[in-house]
Image (cartoon, rainbow, N blue to C red):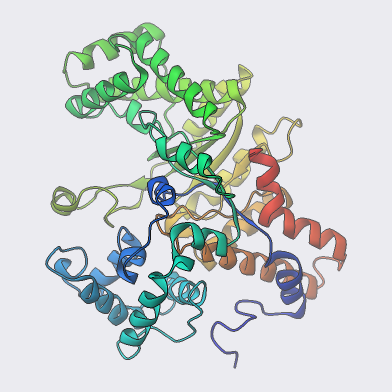
Length: 467
């Protein structure tokens, strides 16, 4: 019987252990997509306790606590203390067996805190006190945690109207880890609600220092902000969408639709699809003009629980996997760009595992032979970023594409303790490949294996994004 979370955690064979410990474990991290706060990095924030750094904003843990019978007040409520919320999480952890949260929780305690105890009601006070003591030292500030994790690059997620003042402050401070913005323009196409959309366009107008009255004005404002993001080191965009938008439209129609919504009139479903299709295309053209990487996170159905959305807002644990068909619109969108020679480097992430092979085969349609792995299929995301989901993603990619050109893992997280997900991924990858070697499915060629493993864990992303 193996000990839980020992040095060979997940690694089942001697070859897997060698690949991980000798080739993967010590590589720097390129966390090219996440949601951590650049302000907290700029301020080098010191968290007061484990709840603040570990539970605030973590809707994964919130969902688990609710499922375990913890009332909302004990999950996100203001009347519950941070200590009480931590205790509620400690009471929930034993019931997360076989959920990735069990692995992540204990990996995050082990690194950076050096705690190898199992979190439970019996150990919660001891762990709370030990972690809090360390969090209140300079060695556990935001920047120190990033340094401890050996993070070379962080790609945050930023709206076109953001000032990026904190990115500038970080750069000016001489912090060695490169913290770069990523362009997330979803709000500029979110015309489902006229009032909210107009409020956003007014905000964008202020940021771009121009009036936005026409569709042409909108594109000009976005161009200005896109140029500014590039000046600030941006190399990638990101889009979080339920589906690809590839409806037929004309520029005149897009112009008329924008005028209509600027008058405060609500759009019908057909107009919404046309406008979103126009905007998604324009975003892709902007990215191509600068050689950026465009990322598409597709397939979440969000804010399912209206009552809780009204109470807590978005990203609070009430989202799930959508089941809309994706192949046709994805193909139409990519094909138009490829035909017009405006398809930049692209990473596609699916949330519905039923679409794995659809995504894996879509990549090959649009590779151009100029850039290795130009069209990527992103690592298992959100509900799929666990051992089973990542193995299925890598198996499908291996079967239908080139795993060796894969740009690997990202945290997609709001927590400064999530860098252990890179370790988790690297262990899973090395186990997958190492086991194949020992089964005789892959030859033992140490130099080739080293190149493939280190490429997926680090070098492919480094070269692909050109940070």
